[in-house]
Length: 415
Image (tube, rainbow, N blue to C red; front, side):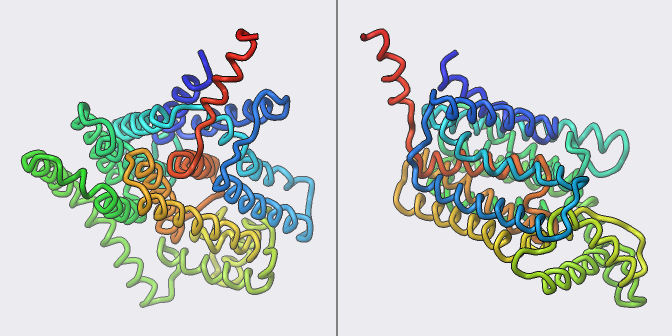
């Protein structure tokens, strides 16, 4: 199997497995990225010359450097050095990108769309089984409702985007994958993912507005009817989650009781802001986050609980790596948004629009989802973060290295 074909199946595998199989996506991508590292280190492949990729790689390297520096200056302990392992994910981006780009762009985009369809259907199936057996929020292969919902909200729209860009013959199957992902999101009970999904849908209506109007009126009505049916069937879950927020707020207002989902978030934000104010430049180190939270909850609110993050992605980054590290991730998202809008404004090609839409999904999910959850800091979300960067940058602004690879492969036989 040649490299372009391998990359196509690799894309399909990475995109399709995250909701249902959880951390399997991390094993697949990291295994591939390490292989890419070895290929470049041994001189069998070269780095991509794409400027956009190198800008992103530089920003991610700043984040990694700030995190390492923060670890070094904040009471480093050998027992905590394992917390730094996740930083390798971001350093592998230029290696993975460079070998991933030895491929046909259309094949990669179609594989991503097909993977999004599989992810949507599999997420829905897992959610129905989990909710039906336990009556609790669906958690999927991640074992965490928020992570499951975030992955589903990011991957499902690739199916509908692919339908509008390429897969006209399979439009109902592809569109069904997106609708299935929405059903899975409802069963996850993750209110923040619902907001992300709504914003991504709004972006999709803008990006693909011409393609949407090309659909027959009956097809649009049929899709609207399906979405309305999901809305009716899910109204009980949505109302219940909304009532929980109202009850938490009332509980907090009446007795200053922070022992609720909303109350704990407010407490975590207070602790995080105080910690950031004390060490604004480099932060307190990612190895100290749990200790800061546990101590802050106990001393400030009389609560004996622990969390791994502050339920606000940017705040967590600022506490762990300060203005330098958190600013680098914020700059990365800003630059990706710039690439997306530049691609949409400059080109009407389906590949460029699909790649730009992929970047928009990542930015919206990171900003909306990260406002009350996390941006990075979980192996599944870290993997999806770099995957969407690689696919989006490559399709919207990258250069395929496949012609060069074909010439190099043909050279020995010609000689």
